Amino acid sequence: TQLLEQSPQFLSIQEGENLTVYCNSSSVFSSLQWYRQEPGEGPVLLVTVVTGGEVKKLKRLTFQFGDARKDSSLHITAAQTGDTGLYLCAGWVSGGYNKLIFGAGTRLAVHP
Amino acid sequence: KAGVTQTPRYLIKTRGQQVTLSCSPISGHRSVSWYQQTPGQGLQFLFEYFSETQRNKGNFPGRFSGRQFSNSRSEMNVSTLELGDSALYLCASSPMTAEADTQYFGPGTRLTVL
Image 1 (cartoon, rainbow over the protein chains, first blue to last red):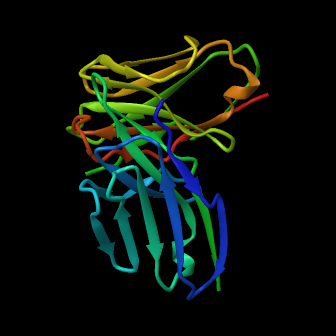
Image 2 (cartoon, chains in turn yellow, orange; image 1 turned 120 degrees about the vertical axis):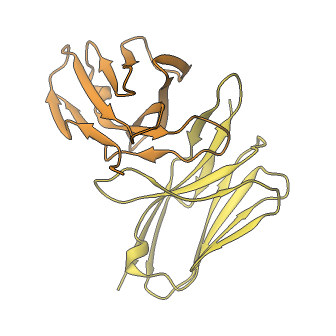
């Protein structure tokens, strides 16, 4: 069974601080995705990383895919209150038709 | 384009009852997936439908079932509800479930079982 473990589970920081959340697995994934979910809404895709070692930037968010394609990280620079939410990593599992499995998520609270 | 819509948004049922949830995908999307989200287990894959056929299934008991209609709208049904079925049920649509495809999620149906 392919599992994705996220850490930390919870993160509470002040506006302006930097943070990193991690997504790890013992399995190799051909791609990983990061989603953000806000209260009362469904998850929204932030990025897809496909190539081992790939780094993608989305404004203040930097996503990295590990060289071995077993892990990924999300780094936020100068966090803002609008970054508050649940960050989920997800990986596609092959086998017949593909399905998406999710990590448990990191709940981020950014305080003014 | 309108996003994924789910109805109802909130539902309260009692143990033993059954429930049907509905999902309307983004126009043109043929794949619909369902997920259960709970604080303890996170987001777990239930099943995926494409062109009215179930293509993939998660590890849930047979009380959880679904179907997809010719217009790609989908329903999921839970029979003989248990307290542990209380959760946020999310549906997601995509053009087709290919590797690294984007899933567009609806706002979910929050089911409470008393």
